[in-house]
Length: 106
Image (cartoon, rainbow, N blue to C red; front, side, top):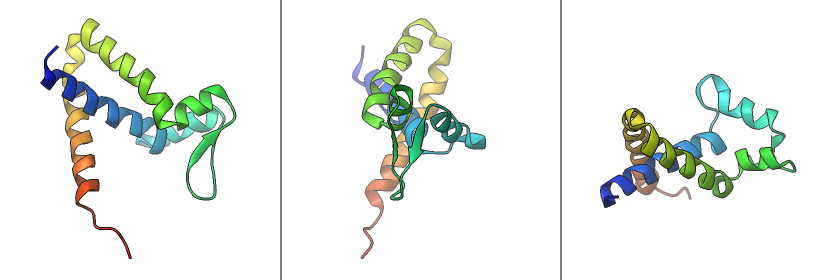
């Protein structure tokens, strides 16, 4: 596998994992999914859970392993979805660039 393919899948994995674990998503679907799985949002805005599936959907590190496995499997077995990984990778790169260029408050 080429470096560019790995970079593309890594950025797509980052974007999809961030969407699942930290964002509301379209029609608040991701938020509802986390709540259904037993996750809750604490006073400081962070997501947590005492349940396995809630933890999986609220912990970036946990979810990234499974998302990476699914993204890679889809890349290998469903190459028609590669356009989706490109879109997610471009969005992920834009998100990372935005974060890197924001100035700290204070």
